Length: 118
Image 1 (cartoon, one colour):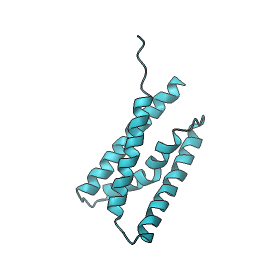
Image 2 (cartoon, rainbow, N blue to C red):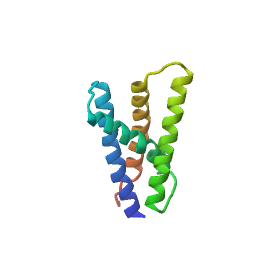
Image 3 (cartoon, rainbow, N blue to C red):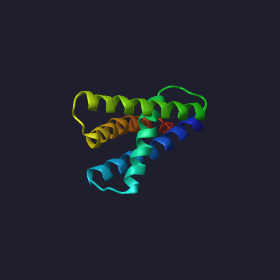
Image 4 (cartoon, rainbow, N blue to C red):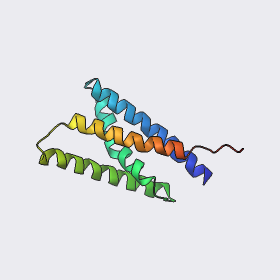
């Protein structure tokens, strides 16, 4: 169990890095292959992993498969809402997803920290 929490904490830190890079590249309006890759990695993994890690899944492969499925589902719902509301601002939508995902990831980092023995 301790090892699983350590892996989740490290994964949350890595995905927080992806969130930061994605938001930075979008806010600075830098158009490069790095931005495309960062957005694809973020949209394909981070939102779903932030949600699925609340579920106690024992197998890492099931966690990641579920994370990718949830991430793509969230992205499709957000894109559909942009289309239905005629408010097509994908950069703002991705930044909003980054903020929501980062909040969940920070919670995972805080809850998976080793407790000090007093």
